[in-house]
Image (cartoon, rainbow, N blue to C red; front, side, top):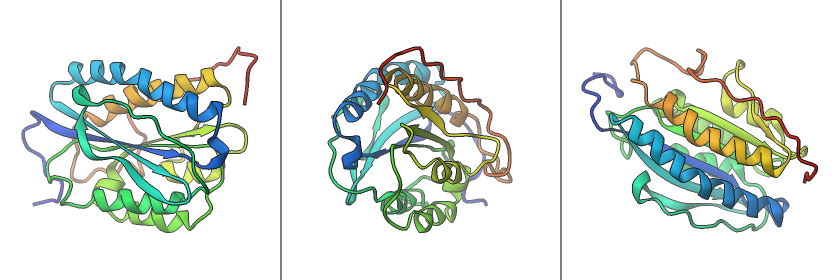
Length: 228
């Protein structure tokens, strides 16, 4: 039997993991807007979960700066999830964050029967550690290879090449969030459309790294004057 077998779809979990850049470059308005945007997206995530009764949406958050650490380590059902603001501190150790996530994508602790996890990466800068090793660790897990991935680039300084490699699909692009309005739109979309995509059954022979994902990112128009 496959590590990710088929079978009845009722009440299978969808693990949604935020990976949030909390380096010093995020201080001030950026981190405040990020906290606000995620907090405001939670009700929409609940609505999507209620519209997909076969999927049990479970949320977690991991932050990375000088070190990577779980902000919400244990999976929390979306109906019980309360956002706790993240804070800035230090460098941009993305590789360490990806490595921590890869450990959670093993089976166990992931169940054998589940829907595709969602990995949503948000960053405004350039990684300061060996991020490629962390990405390889995720790609080495069955659930990591099948995950729905979203990447949001905050500001012009974000390393879009890194975010593109994280997506693992040449047909997808990171979402650009060059203003508070664009960030809010990107967070809202990542919180809902990606969950809908993840709620589809996993086929044992499928590989979302080589096939187009069943969702398309939005065009984030920006008519605001205020930019970071």
